[in-house]
Length: 396
Ligand SMILES: *Cc1c(COP(=O)(O)O)cnc(C)c1O
Image (cartoon, rainbow, N blue to C red; front, side):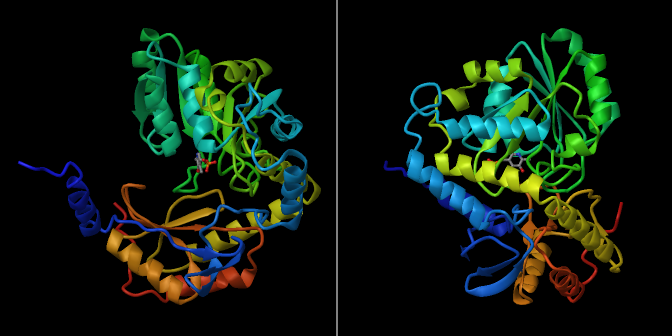
């Protein structure tokens, strides 16, 4: 009998299509700014993580080009062997300064930073207590670490307390893990309270600032700064690829933490160092963030404006948000896809996000500092003109 060991792929893809879960890439030409060309159509872009509009900034491009001229395109080795260049260190110092921490370490992506850091800091003798809506990289890192993982309902501090009271004493180390800004919702974690609970239970805290860095806080230091927690000890991770317009990830914290990670993090030790161009672009972005604080101000003004405008529309269920990530809940996957298509015809590019990425379908919009008020008005008008209404689930 001949069998096809790959035959299951056909069936699995059919299942995905039937559930409206099947996904495909969409080609965007040129730079990912406030206005883009998608499949040949010019759109206002509300689907980008380029919060400050820096990904297309000529100064980042110039810094990247200069780094390529000096160091070449590849860093040619792992950081501990032959892949470490002066630009890596300068970038790490700039990140530590932005965050007000002793030191920082840069990875090839935020995903790798989270995977490797969790696996380095805890193991099968330890406990991870994690928010239900944490980013995939934190969930996978928790699994990779081999620690016992207990999940608390999204931002539910009573449950967090309860899990710690029940389980903490059975384990050696404990790590509470959370996004600072939840990437598919836009709300924040209650960080001061989480830090206080962690203190009470002798637990470490790891917070993922992917959507906080360059977005929140007076200097763009992130939700940690915004929530007044800079003086406290924790593990902060994040990315260079969102507000900072480059590619790569980082972890920042005490000098000891970073020294330990340099010695123990497999996703840093056994991979090639971040490319000189990416490192230089990220460093240039951090400089611009402090030289041009008006970008940050405008970003948060735009985010507030969009939330206020959407809040006034009838039949819209706006998810709670304190960030430039703004979501409206939509009743099912088919409806959110139809809404996404409708917006595209109106020249608006926003993300129709469906399970399994999120538990409930939603339109996810991200605001940029470089959006004009007219851009935002066009978005709101396009949403308002979608039929069938109501979009929202009855709020239960
Ligand atoms: C995007 C993101 C990451 C991954 O960062 P990359 O640098 O893109 O790999 C990690 N955590 C969160 C919350 C994110 O949104």
